[in-house]
Length: 483
Image (cartoon, rainbow, N blue to C red; front, side, top):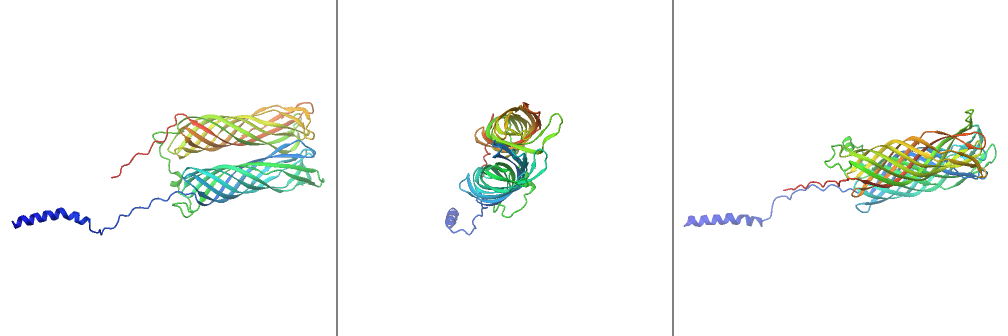
């Protein structure tokens, strides 16, 4: 009987023991969990540096040569700056910034009445303003900016347009105040390091420049420049998560993502696009006698033009890897880039316009995310310039002389960004630089036979829409069950 009671008590202890133990305090340390990764935040200070290219076109007139003319300029530039951003929501970023630009954008200032011209250049400018951006992905920002800007144009030593000889006269250097507006994109290529590409338009207002020197005062030249630039460069953001000290990104960080294309190659297929924007051209010109071949206006001149620029086109892309897309494209560009054609030898000037252009080539893109691509493009282009009816540069009266329209062949180089906003629908921001071959334009009509040598180049920026046929939404990530 004692054995039975002992056995029953042991069984009860075995059953009750775990339940009682559950109520006792544990001596085991709590589990340790890894901290969550730091969240992306655009709030903070940054520094930036970039290089690029710019063109300016300037309305000019004098009291003697009262007809408005447009002279042009162009050149390379560098830019350094800094700013502060604050991220308000998951997508909205706003900030303030300042930067300085240095370069040599050389062009022409001209007094057709006195038969003289010179070469001022915009050698520096600075800008301060604000920007407002939208995060397409946590590490890709598209933005618009605007603010105040000031530029310096150097003095211009004036030469005789016919002989190229120094006249002893010049125009003074000056600072011009104005405003700017632009658009751009920033994307991270390594922790804390970003690549930025930006287009900027600036208007500096009009100014009267005294033409004085050894010949005495020849009158004021009214000069109103408009400048557009494209820059691309790097940005370093202080205190970016996982990268608290400056450093050079590794090769692995930069090339991450060159693996094979995903099973659903979303970017492979045909697309159509349309956009509208603004363009500026500048053209080297000279005047010569077509019979003797001798120059009549020997000093090189540079005229300019600007206006509305459109684009409609189509293309085909093929996704090579999970990051790289290559394709071919074609586009037609209706436009009205109106400028000036000048014959100082006969004191004539007229309006000339680029009416249309077309282009065909290829592009190579980098997928920042499955639905956002940055790209570069290049190829062949052709532009049509209309005929110019020439007027007296002094009175504006019709001369009965004109030049014929012509088509110019050339090449282009550009780039842009595309981002999806609805299934199959993308918005695109695009920049293009084009250089065209030279043409000799005979003057037709009464008067002495004269030919104008004309060689244009052009840059344009457009915003538009793209529709991708058979676009496939990115496949959802596989569900992983943890036990």
